[in-house]
Amino acid sequence: MAETGTNIEVERDAFYSQPEWDVFWVRYIGAGGHRLFAWLSVPHGDGPFPALVRMPDYASVHDIIYTPLRQRAVVMNATHRGQRNSGGQVRASYPGLLTDGIASADTYTLFGAYADALRAVDVLAGQNVAALSGDVALTGAGLGASLALAAAAHRPGVCAVAADTPLALGHPAGLEPGLGYPLAELGDYLRVHPELREDVAELLSTVNPVDTAGAVSCPVLMSAGRFDRSVCPLSCAEELARALPACDFRVYDGAAEGGGHVHGLARGAWLAERLGIQIS
Image (cartoon, rainbow, N blue to C red; front, side, top):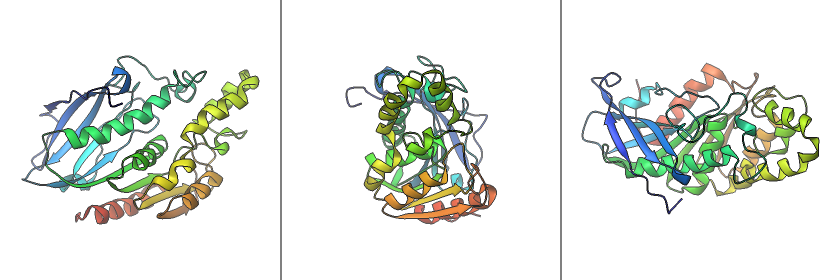
């Protein structure tokens, strides 16, 4: 990505801005020249502020993240290529994102999404509308959790990751039979192209979160659902938790929601503690 400049453009959004914070549209260039978009929320005050980046999940639209952390922290809600406002060259399909361009590493859309996650962290550091303290945490659910872990593995300045039910993309559990969507997209593809199973498994292994987990040096809070068969099967979550050097792993009696509201409260408190802020 080094050869592609970011060309960061920032525009305040008067509608979403509030008395306690300003909201900005941020546009920038990703790898391969893709135009990307993120929301950025900046508290009023002189700073410097800690920051939180929410990585995008499997969905076409990502609105502003609503969190009490925004009163004390810069909050960035990034998107990846193919999503709304980042779809100039690629238009993601739902279902279909997990198999779009899967015939080749050069055309597989989701490999670009991993590059876009790294770009988001770099753009946050390079923007000039908020003074940052240096403490940057990442969060995400499903695909967003996997992107957050991958970004932390390649950006050692990240201080914490809250990863809810990381998508088992690249892990053998993601190709098991009988899975629900979105992982079922891979099963659908292989039913039509059974002769490509080994090729698909090899290509996807590039982003197996277990393989890069050892490079995540910061603390990780990870949730999983005991009966999840669509996003992060428990076998994948357990192996990933063991591979992460500092993982607070919480398993809930549910499925892909990974603890739902209960874990959401725990996550908010955990992130606030890691960022050194108090929330009301």
